[in-house]
Amino acid sequence: MHEFPIWQLGPLQIDISSFIAITVSVIVTFLIAKLAVRNLSVDNPSKFQNFLEWVVDFVHNFISSTMPLNRVKPFLSLGMTLIMFIFISNLLGLPFGIVTVPHHAISWLGVTEEMVANHAELAWWKSPTADISVTAGLALIVFVIVHFLGLRLNTKHYLKHYFHPFPVFFPVNVIETISKPVTLALRLFANIYAGEVLIATILMMGWVGTPFLVAWQGFSLFVGGIQAFLFTILTMVYISQAAIHDEEH
Image 1 (tube, helix red, strand yellow):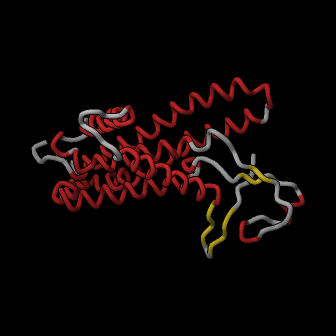
Image 2 (cartoon, one colour):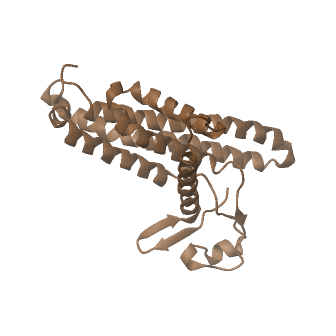
Image 3 (spheres, helix red, strand yellow):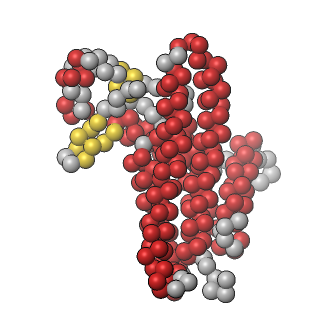
């Protein structure tokens, strides 16, 4: 396995490969979104526009499965952003890897004399979601959004659910609330990280592993899509439970 260069910024340790990949993911997501709204036509839609409409309908339909149809629209852009960014991030590590062998120590990158002496291989590229700090950050953002919306849009039910069905269940409900972002982060990280570890293992087999590499990368496209879908739909489920619960239900 390769080592990842670390940028020491005061008390923070920033994985440079993750930082680079996150930046690329943001740029790609933004460019796709920008291109998607260019040259829209009602009479003569392009193939890309037709594909975009299919994606929007798909996201709209699975969000509507988690909440009343008339409440979907405000959350459609959030769902589109999440599923696009996570899917792109999941796949970034598949096409190629950038690996170098340092020839001299670079302290601010975390390259030590020991690494140089041992000819350690430094990896500068990976899927951002193969880093637990990235998936934890995404889960934390979802956690804040869910509970902000719960307090703002459905205060009475949101506070009441912590004491449901009896006040004695308050600690259990708090633990359940905390466990949701934890499982979101761990599920996404574990699946993508395991896939990249397997790819690294196959690469060690040389040309013999080429058929396995092709097959696994094809399967990884499917896994990346499923994980992006699961993260997004669970986010919408949590929003619906916290902010769009009808009292009569």
